[in-house]
Length: 152
Image 1 (tube, helix red, strand yellow):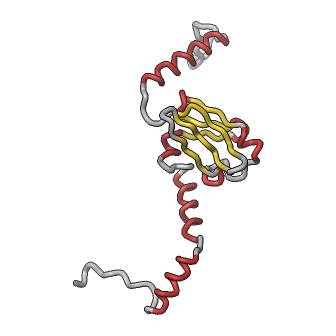
Image 2: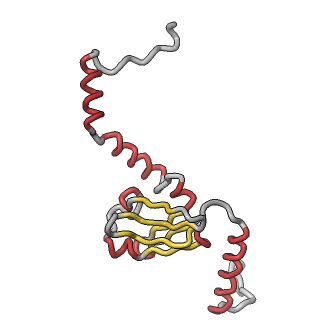
Image 3: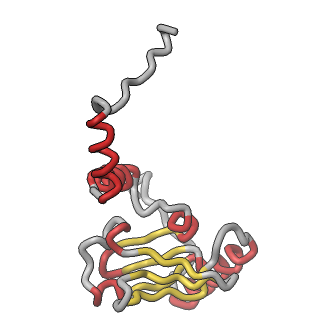
């Protein structure tokens, strides 16, 4: 007696059937022209930037160290990038990294935890202006106290 959870499929998997399914999905995605679409992507070694050329003529670029999973990648691994989702996603097979183009354009380079860590690291950066402002605040007695909303 067959297991009640076993299921049989009444079709045969072929490369042609898979190619037809992919073509149909890409055609449906093309109809839903939501968000930016890329026509090409490449890693520019000289500038250390991932460059995305959009179909509207604009160019979007970002340094790989910002993106989760690309921060420790070699130039050879970064070169191995391709577009998916009808120009709406970037993929690095060797790094197992996938990014939505609309999310990247909005500045989302990874999970919430990844983005929080980027923010924390950014807050630790020092600059001449930041050091000078800290010195000026120190001369005034330090950082201003927060106003207490319960005491007018």
